[in-house]
Image (cartoon, rainbow, N blue to C red; front, side, top):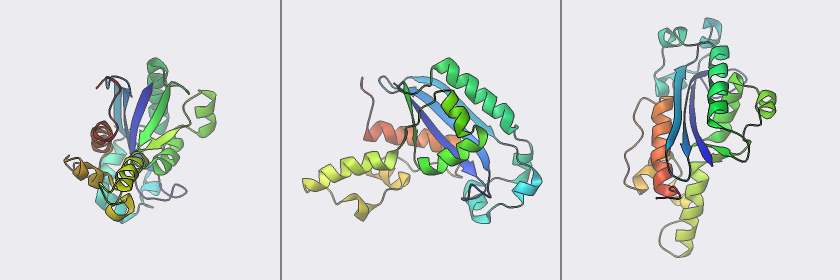
Length: 195
């Protein structure tokens, strides 16, 4: 089974107005933890879409127009991802997506590769999230009075990292920083079968 650890950066939170600015992923064998592929790129957006950016989102991820103007076209990126997924065997029942916030990442990922195409390619429809994995473990500990319930401590990735004595995500928030930190947290919270 493969895990596609994926993160996106965008110019806002509303997928009907805002656009994906960066995508990164690492494809990992969930049995061994072996890295099968990794990818990161900035996504070109025209100036008229950039001008709709939410300033707070740009403050968090640090993107500038100069960086976005040098990005690769969504069509090029979609083709590269499609080719890589095919080569690695990313298919339904053989892989899952894993994100910190899959409801966010999935909708912006779909700006690059629409859901109908994803379905035609038989890509996984399971988008799992780290917070739910942590929630389940934290609830088991709370039932045994070994820890407070997760709603009293929080579910941010940085909080989960601190619980396992891991560093916070590197700043600014960039997609590959997010993926690497997500993978580090996943390994601590869930782990791989052979480890």
